[in-house]
Length: 115
Image (cartoon, rainbow, N blue to C red; front, side):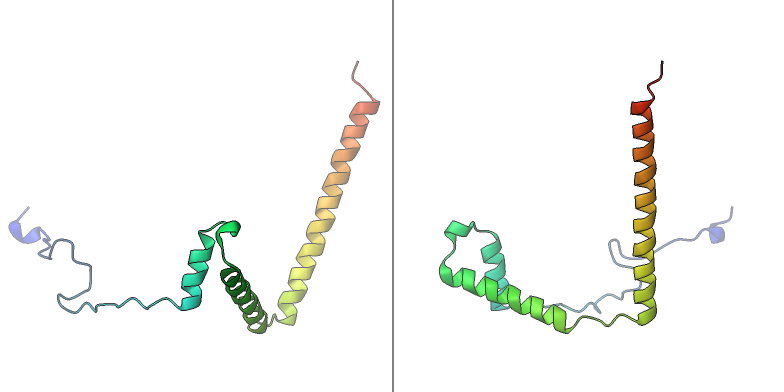
């Protein structure tokens, strides 16, 4: 092997691939919203430790999040709905057939004991 046949890496130890030195952007953490900070504070406490105002704010926030989720729910296409309903129906039929078979086997064992 000749010295020219060796591939050597002369990068900087610990530096990420494809990034140039000095081009990293400093990210600034966003300040959490007041609602979020209340939520995290409430999550860490027991119910008897909370004030009425904290419980009310938490319940309001959860209600608003639920309403937002309902309002922004994605529409499901007719084809996807059809396939989903079909799969659920088939799964129920298969589960029922399997359960019937297992029950039949169990009853047969109990009524015809092996001698």
